[in-house]
Length: 219
Image 1 (cartoon, rainbow, N blue to C red):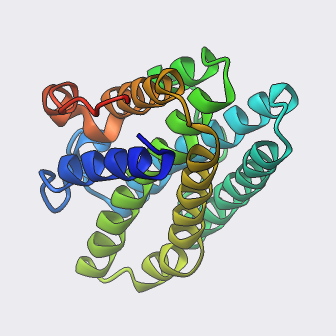
Image 2 (cartoon, rainbow, N blue to C red):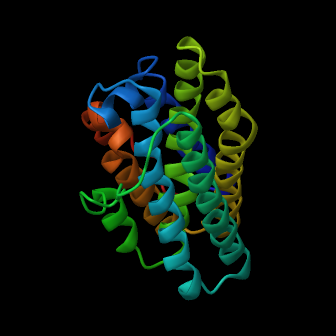
């Protein structure tokens, strides 16, 4: 199978999965039902930090310059998102003094991502899969913010955070299309993508459906 057809098939799988989500299902899953803007923003702080840190962790051991560029850009963007969210929480009157996003430790997804050793696995599980989940989560969060009248938080995501995370996903897709050529490479990418989706907090309620996704032919 040529690489573009293969990657398009994975995108279709993800879209089929995401189509089964309820209107606020990713938000409810990650917040244990505590649907408040400030609570969701606090949870987003940890996600942004972890995404920035994992991209930085991968950067020195990624030999391909174009892939390294993707990780470098993501590292910087995610850290900037973190700071923008901190600023927005302050505007909402949320005092973060003493707040530690890592008080509960790193997420299972973070531990999984750190375990990946090849560029294709990292690109598939990180920018390609995680940022696809972020795209869905952010869209749901924007709708939620509008529904509760928080136009400023919605605008922050609409203008900056959401478009940049869509960009990360697209750049990850381009790298996979460029390098996932052989059946063995495609199998590695498919496994990393599906594993990342299965572990993601936002998709907890869909784990069984995730693991039940149809298998893409590898030839």
